[in-house]
Image (tube, rainbow, N blue to C red):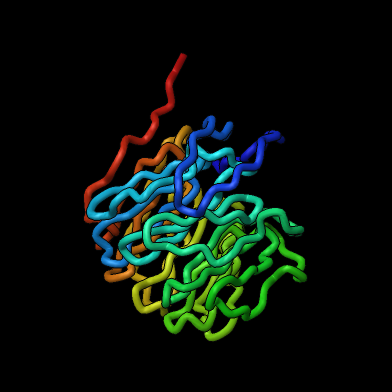
Length: 286
């Protein structure tokens, strides 16, 4: 079962906050569901980002702060790691929040965008990043170069993930139907439609360490391997706690599936080791 977000319009006071700092403010009125996960550079730890701006860390990943105490105009929808010592979060309006060693290179906050921002990816140097909208619109900051987008292409379903090529001179977008769109030197290794798989619940895509392959994950826990990605397994989630995200180990073949509540299931040489984390929510019978 795919989750559908119902977003409430809220009015908040704008505060001047340095990226990566904390502020004394009421908690943002957004639910605490996972929106994304990302491994540290060593692959021995990871972070989970939540709708309300909170961040949790596992393994050897350290917590460098989050946006849970900030008066967010829009909820957090994605994030990306900066090596082992920092990370960014991105909100639906394109606002970017920097923590630890991650530096702020710009954002789309208070700028006109056609569709909400849903994900982000760091450049290889860590000195820039791309933001991706639901329509596949791409916004480049720092040393991130623009290689094209699907912003003007009619899509069957929205874009909900972005990964980069091995050189950093390209990126791939994945849609909720498992369609793949490659730009720059990012190669196409297949998609769900090219395999004849009909889907509307794809939650994201994760790259192999070489960048010459990727996994596509669905909300029902099915995972499909392309290129040099190995078939490492699937997971049958509780219908009350479906899969919301997938992220991989940058050093070895492995990935974690993440449920809405923040439980993670490890496959192969997963980020942070082979042990599951958290507890998936069961369906409670009245």
